[in-house]
Image (cartoon, rainbow, N blue to C red; front, side, top):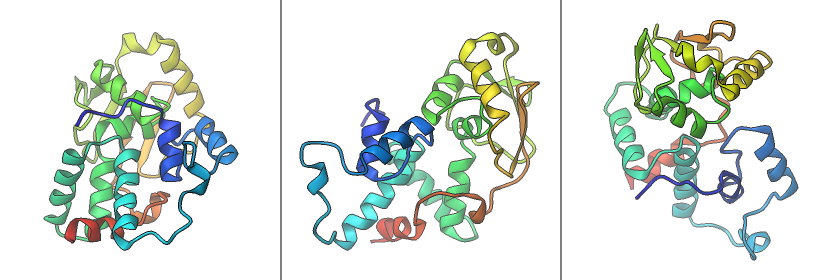
Length: 206
């Protein structure tokens, strides 16, 4: 299955959450708080099954991070093999993806843009170019925008906008130098995600 390249707004309406985490998509959700399509306003009148609830929760999180099913399941299985609370470990692994960290640092306005940004070679990790969106960032890693890329209009706009955004507490960002450091793993309470990860554990444990 290929990566979804359709409307993130429609996907967000289908899942009922702001998958892009942008003000533009939130405005659409506020205006049309129901699923897309001709019968969108009629959906959800009946009580969903336990399976349906858990499936939708899994879909929400996978779509939030822009991952396909195989990638998502493999990462979950890895999280389940690591000591600790499986749900929290899983979310931490998702947060450590390079495309997500680039987004969190404000160098890209969405994860989708961050994935493209990384794939085109605009990011250095500890001074070395990394173009793999799923690359796992480690504590202490320093991310920097390639110097020649800093002149690109949308990158400058993102860096300027990041100065007004609240920086995630597990990151340190210097918008002036187009760099940031992954300081620590995020705690569950740091992640304001509208997700019940226990449903996802139950989905994969069925």
